[in-house]
Image 1 (cartoon, rainbow, N blue to C red):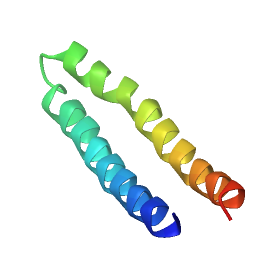
Image 2: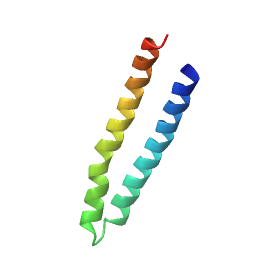
Image 3: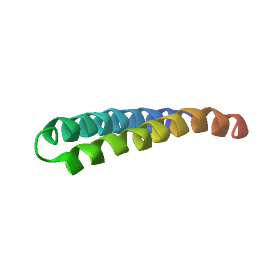
Image 4: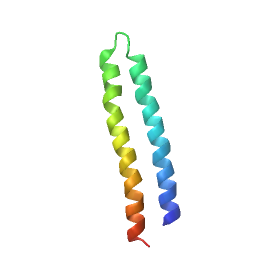
Length: 67
């Protein structure tokens, strides 16, 4: 179970970093003449950070119950 949780944490971390890069790209592309595209990128950042923090706290909690 511990191995599965560690793989899941790394998978979520990789997806979270990719999500932050996508949000940054949207903000950079939407800087000129596409303000809604930039705003979508900016509003996506809290969601990505929330998902990363949820995964970071959920894995140790689940590991406690399965030991």
